[in-house]
Structure formats: structure tokens, C-alpha cells
Amino acid sequence: MCRTKAQAKRLYDRISRFYDFFAFPEGRYRDRALELLDIRRGETVLEIGFGTGRALVKMAELVEDEGRVYGIDISSGMLEVSRERLKKAGLLERAELYCGDASRLPYENEKFDAVFMSFTLELFDTPQIPEILAEIKRVLKPGGRLGVVSMSKEDGGLLVRTYEWLHGKFPQYLDCRPIYLAEVVKNTGFVVVREEKGRIFGLPIEIVIALKPGRNVYGEGHH
Image (cartoon, rainbow, N blue to C red; front, side, top):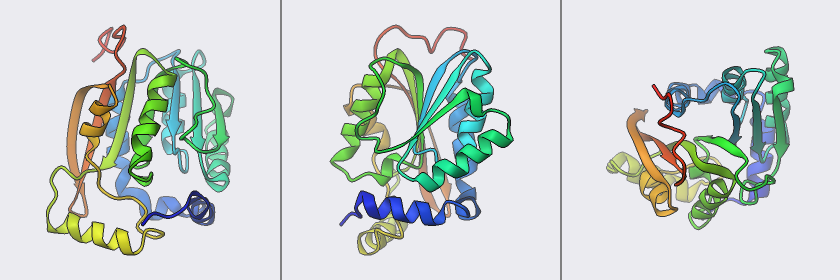
């Protein structure tokens, strides 16, 4: 069972103003993934499912005036919260936000140096996940980087199985569920260059950094 996109949009519109209060444990993994993604001055980067815009602000700081940050999210409520956050940080001119569905990204081929997703990919229905990754691959430049943070099924145990059962019963409330992140990224044709694991409330979390095959910009000056 999976909730509809209309249900997802309504939920996120409703909780957008106080989402940060219960999503705070995600922050350390989001920040670590951004660190590993190594966004640089002058780059063009995209975040899918930007939520309340905390990562967008960091990305806009990193690309500086020469770069550009794009974001797409299904929730107009989240978009307003993010726009306010960027404006308050004095970074709104560096960002272009779009309210829409990530399964059909409104961007041309090979536009971005890097794409970032934090606790977003696992929200999509299982058949859609490879479609989302294929769209990301399309809009990334050759050698472009993908950074994803997700709940992980790799270290599945009783807690994961219990969570999955609850997700099946109440998908409108427990919207995300564990996925085999590295496996699905590799299966879409990306080259995984870094994996890190952690836990939130005992549930396994995975960070994956991957490259679109082509000219490897990741190795140039990477630290």
C-alpha cells in the first residue's frame, strides 16, 4: 500500500511550518552527505525534495555568486518555507525553486554538476525509484555527482521488519521505508564511490555518493 501524491502533497503542505521539529535527527546525516558531495564554487546543483530548505541554504553558500542552486518539491508549503529561509540568509537570488513531481524533472539534459536527495528517494513507490534515478542521470553532466541519504534495508532486523509492517498499515503517517540504496543506484548505471552507514532511533541509515559515467570531475581537486 502506498499513499497517493495528492495525499503526500496535502500532508507536507500541512506540516511544512513545523516539520523541522520532528525531522531534526536527520540533520547530521544530511550535513555529512553534503560534505561528501563536495559542492564547489560556480557549480549548478539540484536538490530533489528540499523540504524546509536547510540543505538549499548550505548549497547556495557553497556555489557562491558564480553558481546556481535549483530545487524541486511536491509541496507548495515547503517551497514557501524554503523561500523564506533563503531570503533570510540573503541567498534567494542564487536559487530557483519549483513545485512539482520529481518523476519528470523540468530540466534539460546534462544541466547539473551535482544532485542531492536527503530522506526523499525512499518516499517514492518502489517501481518509481529507478525512474527517479534515471531522470537524475539524464539531467546530470557526464561525471556529475549524486548524493543520497536514505533509510536502509541493508542491516535489516526485527526493528526494520516492525517498521515496515507499520509502514504498510499506516503509509500516510510513516511515509518513508527502508530501501536497498546502493544496489538500486548501481542498477541504474551509476558508479558508487562512497558509502557510509548510521542509525536514527535504531533504524539503519545509508549515505551513497555516486557518479554518472563519463568525464570524472569528482577527482579534480577533491578532498
